[in-house]
Amino acid sequence: MPTDFANGPLDGVRVLDLSRVIAGPYVGRLFADLGAEVIKVEPPEGDDARRIAPRHDRGQSWLLHFSNVGKRSIALDLGKPRAAEVLLAFAAISDAVIENFRPGVAERLGIGWEAIRARNPRAVLLSVNGFGAGSAWSDRRAYAPIVHAITGLLRDRGQGSQTPAQPRIAYSDVLTALHAAVALLAALRMAEATGRGQHVEVPMFDATLASHSEAGNVLIDPPDDRVMNPIFDAGAHGWIAVGGAAQHVWVSLSKEFPRELPDPAPKGAALEQKAAARHQAVAGFLAGQPSQDAALDVLARAKLAAAPVITPKEALLGPLARERGLLVPVDDGKGGTRPVVRPPARFSASRNEVRGPAPRPGEHGVELLRELLGFDAERIRALVESGALLFPEGAGEDA
Image (cartoon, rainbow, N blue to C red):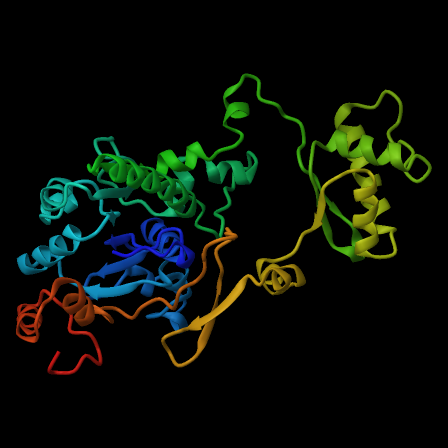
């Protein structure tokens, strides 16, 4: 394929994406943003992300767009032999294949690593799964909420509470996708240098724990039990988060504003009593400022990092996001548009951007078969009649 790096750092790279929901598809989305050609292979019923959504948003859901903008889609029933042959034909002309089946499923379908390598020795196969092939949990279904539980993330969010708190963000999926994207780039570099591909596995369990920045503290005995990164109720100015240990926050502010913040803790008081009194004093000091901006300014004067606690919607629609141009409108597939957050990395000599909407299931099947595999109308019709190919809506009877 011809390469135009100004169009994207990964221009000229072709990725065959067999994965569903978030962890695998988001790797493909990152590659598409960077200019790669990404072919999304869906089952006849479509990616599960089309249905894991509020009732009013099913089909072309926000979740689907999050992980699949900029791709083209072909819908194949991989339970049919002809479909597996078509998929391997695409693998033969691709640089990478992404899958997130449970270990062993791809092999049973005839599209595992050995089958792909036989067709294309240079191809890289990226397998994203829950707990690793060969592990005691290899056959278990893995979604972000489950991995959050088994990696300790839920207990960590609950801070020792007996009532764990499930986040509304698929942390494990996205963390795994980021690790997987780096791994896939590294494997592609090796393939380019050696002419040989390889199989790369990235389990969600491993990736989530590898991303635990406080793992070292968790493992030492006893762990550091300081109160970190306190949040203050600043009254009419809302909640304000401040970075650092609570003691550091108190010392920094009381040194900068000794008159306004005399030590409220009685001499000889227990540490917990001192900490509570000082926290309350800081909260009152911030609440007493004339505005939220003024409260943030006094924290900045004390060389403390701070920000107001706001909702995700407020952040996405707020002035900073507008200044950064973070929201990009794309066709929602339902006669309107929806916003998608643009990729964060900005290159001085290349494009990295949302390339288009998420596809409808099987939307590009006919054009992909014609354009990349050279199939004629008769061969495509035979695939449809066999049930291997979902006939894409609007393709016409003469497809």
